[in-house]
Length: 119
Image 1 (tube, one colour):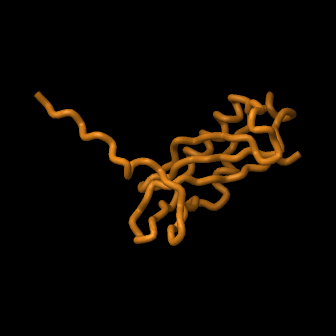
Image 2 (cartoon, rainbow, N blue to C red):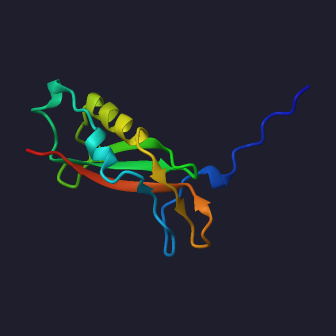
């Protein structure tokens, strides 16, 4: 009988960068902004901005994408699902230089990023 897989370690959970950490950066600057494909049906209903929160892994891939209201919106305001999907696809389609902890070890880190939409 095969052994069950080991439990996920706490080190697999993303953490926020602290003092001395090296933050993840896109391999191609502006990758997220240039990759977002806004559906035409949303063109006249875009918020001024949104906040993205996503994790960048040790391999430079992004996941756990969350789209939050920007600072100019109420936290209870609804964000269109199509916009969430477009932003999530853009983030996941970009590669990142992974971040590292204060000892220089690659780390899975949270990234916060504000995306503004042209009016």
